[in-house]
Image (cartoon, rainbow, N blue to C red):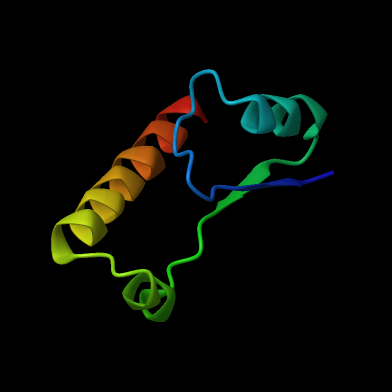
Length: 69
Protein backbone atom coordinates (compact mmCIF):
# COMPACT_ATOMS: atom_id res chain seq x y z
CA UNK A 1 0.00 0.00 0.00
CA UNK A 2 1.20 3.51 -0.80
CA UNK A 3 0.84 5.97 2.08
CA UNK A 4 0.28 9.71 2.17
CA UNK A 5 1.83 12.18 4.58
CA UNK A 6 0.22 15.61 4.59
CA UNK A 7 2.62 18.27 5.76
CA UNK A 8 0.69 21.23 7.13
CA UNK A 9 2.79 23.35 9.47
CA UNK A 10 5.38 20.86 10.71
CA UNK A 11 7.94 20.40 7.96
CA UNK A 12 10.37 18.29 10.00
CA UNK A 13 11.31 14.79 8.95
CA UNK A 14 13.22 13.93 12.10
CA UNK A 15 11.00 13.25 15.10
CA UNK A 16 7.86 13.46 12.93
CA UNK A 17 5.50 10.78 14.21
CA UNK A 18 3.06 10.97 11.27
CA UNK A 19 5.87 10.51 8.77
CA UNK A 20 7.35 7.68 10.82
CA UNK A 21 4.04 5.82 11.03
CA UNK A 22 3.33 6.33 7.33
CA UNK A 23 6.75 4.96 6.41
CA UNK A 24 6.26 1.90 8.63
CA UNK A 25 3.00 0.94 6.96
CA UNK A 26 4.08 1.75 3.38
CA UNK A 27 4.71 -1.26 1.21
CA UNK A 28 4.59 0.55 -2.15
CA UNK A 29 6.19 3.91 -1.45
CA UNK A 30 5.00 7.12 0.11
CA UNK A 31 3.59 10.40 -1.14
CA UNK A 32 4.32 13.64 0.70
CA UNK A 33 1.94 16.57 0.20
CA UNK A 34 1.86 20.23 1.12
CA UNK A 35 -0.89 22.51 -0.16
CA UNK A 36 0.25 25.92 -1.36
CA UNK A 37 -2.64 28.40 -1.25
CA UNK A 38 -1.64 32.03 -1.83
CA UNK A 39 -5.22 33.19 -1.23
CA UNK A 40 -5.19 31.67 2.25
CA UNK A 41 -1.77 33.14 2.96
CA UNK A 42 -3.05 36.60 1.98
CA UNK A 43 -6.19 36.11 4.11
CA UNK A 44 -3.93 35.39 7.09
CA UNK A 45 -1.69 38.38 6.30
CA UNK A 46 1.43 36.40 5.50
CA UNK A 47 4.17 38.76 4.38
CA UNK A 48 6.66 38.11 1.60
CA UNK A 49 9.37 37.08 4.05
CA UNK A 50 7.16 34.43 5.68
CA UNK A 51 6.09 33.04 2.30
CA UNK A 52 9.73 32.86 1.17
CA UNK A 53 10.68 31.18 4.45
CA UNK A 54 8.02 28.48 3.95
CA UNK A 55 8.94 27.95 0.29
CA UNK A 56 12.64 27.67 1.16
CA UNK A 57 11.82 25.12 3.86
CA UNK A 58 9.65 23.16 1.42
CA UNK A 59 12.61 22.93 -0.98
CA UNK A 60 14.77 21.70 1.91
CA UNK A 61 12.07 19.19 2.90
CA UNK A 62 11.85 17.88 -0.65
CA UNK A 63 15.62 17.40 -0.82
CA UNK A 64 15.71 15.71 2.59
CA UNK A 65 12.91 13.30 1.62
CA UNK A 66 14.72 12.42 -1.61
CA UNK A 67 17.87 11.62 0.35
CA UNK A 68 15.85 9.28 2.61
CA UNK A 69 14.60 7.23 -0.36
